[in-house]
Amino acid sequence: MKIKLLSFLFVLISIPFAYAQEAKFMVLGAKGEITSNGKNIHAGDMILSGTTIDIKGSTPYLGLAYIAGGTLELKKPGSYNVADLEKGLSNQDNDLVSKYVDFIKDELTGSTANASTQAKYGSVTRSLKKKPIFFYVPINSNAIKSNVNLTWAMKEGVEKKDKTFKLFIKDRKQHVLIEKEVTGTTYALDLNDPELKDQKYLFYYVEDADNHKIASDVYAFEVHKDGGDAQTDKALEQLKANDTAIGHLILAKFYEDKGFIVNASTSYEQAIELSNGDEQYIKMYEDFQARYGS
Image 1 (spheres, rainbow, N blue to C red):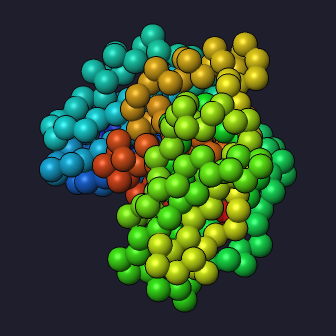
Image 2: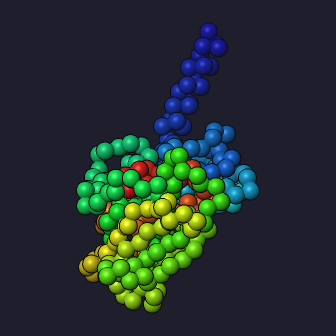
Image 3: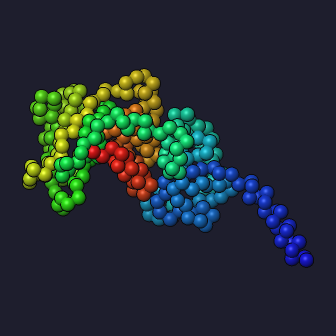
């Protein structure tokens, strides 16, 4: 009888404590050995109040979205108290950031409650992937003047080992503006490069340096000096100030939402690099490539 009574009292005592714990953070990305009160943390998990986060490993990464607004990244091993983390974010609520963080949360959870960036998907033109090389952007797209990455891949069945490529960028009259030999499958292009001569439309393709028959289609994008209106430019300036993995992930969603797909692709790559190769961010980029890769 005493044992039953003690058990009943223990349950009564435990209930208020359990209900007192609230969700404080949502995990956007996690890499390394990361636990909360002894349990492994994964993308999409909620971090509760009154808990501690333990991070181990040589290149860990933890990206968090605060439930009341704002984001946080942890990249150093150690033990972190959730209450202390919350204090540092109490004044970071921002409607613009929150909007695009919500897009990321929806992608993690598979939610369709909010309108996503898919509203823009119909405004691009895709290739039919007939050529052995393809880029991870639509065959016709848009880009804001900045540094962008042109990234390509080989179709299945094409020899991929140790290839060197030639990249060509031309104007509307097919004058060669840039011709570069590239090792690897990415070329960093500065759209402010004087060699581009402020051309509004750029056409580009890549081919195997040893076999010009192994090539991509000719891709094109329209170059924009800015976002098109004062509100978009102001938002861009604000978002670019956050030079973190989550910051670039948010920027990728913003660019995608506005139809600047080349810039979005570059921001995804920067987010992956800054997160030490977080698997969830890689998956988001792969999903983006599946949507837009021509």
